Length: 445
Image (spheres, rainbow, N blue to C red):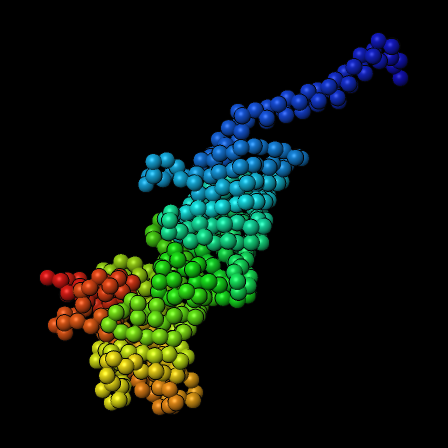
């Protein structure tokens, strides 16, 4: 072994001290100084913009340990042509990212998401997921104790509060997938729900699907449907929903939808009496839908293409005008007593039950759904009776007859041309003759 002189040993010790203590310490000090500067935060914001395609502002950035980053006061904005500046789409008190090879774990607290509507929010989420699919990240795990989603125009938005949000995103470029579980709670209890996202980019054009499904717990408040229609106004206070909603998109076309499930505790007065002033109906009902499909109707735009299910209710009352209108316009069969009933006195019933099948041509097939103890064709049974006072029509009816029954008017017009009737026509499929002649449909010239 070559002996080392004392000066050589001192030189080696000095080099060792520099290599293993002084230089690392200087590097740590310099790094700490660099990341504490505002310019570093701006660099991180610029990196987010490249990754997500969205404007991001951050108050603080910390690195508690290797591979872990904590962002404080994070705000995400998106350019919106309808506004004078970028619109806030999400903000969080803190976001913790843990990154390893190809994997990313995201934890957030105080998360709030904002969107002017369901369709716009879906487009924003879809765009972010597509960008992630092009990045080096292959798997993203989510763990969010609670968050708030605010949908709709300001002043008329609906807030959704989610808890125990956990999920996983696989960012395969050809077929990214995501599955998220969460809970929604109200005064009835907590309901576990599930969201799944798939995108098949291997087809041309690409196909995207997003599905929402209730899994366990009580039915949730029907206000969750507010981005699609005013649930309080149509279904009444306290209505509930349980089931699955699947939204699909081909390329950049409009979204289509499919719903399967139950709408319960529907206030029939809200559904009928407050919408159709010529008639009255009261009671609590349940609408069970085997299938309801929303999509493009040639010549009519987007609306309900077809629906199948049944409507049932317990005790309530109905105005003679409504039963008589259904008889004259949709061929419902009624008793002589109902036909001759004075308009000032409502008819009390013990049960209502009707199954229906609405197809894309506006044809409606109606059958009884009162149960085994009643006549199979029965739709409406009076108090203290078993025989029906109204039965399903023989053959089929159509949407034209339904609209004329709900909006009675001049018999010479195909469909009354009121503002309210046009709202109904906007969403239900019309028979081919009416769909091809809008002036007749609306009663115009």
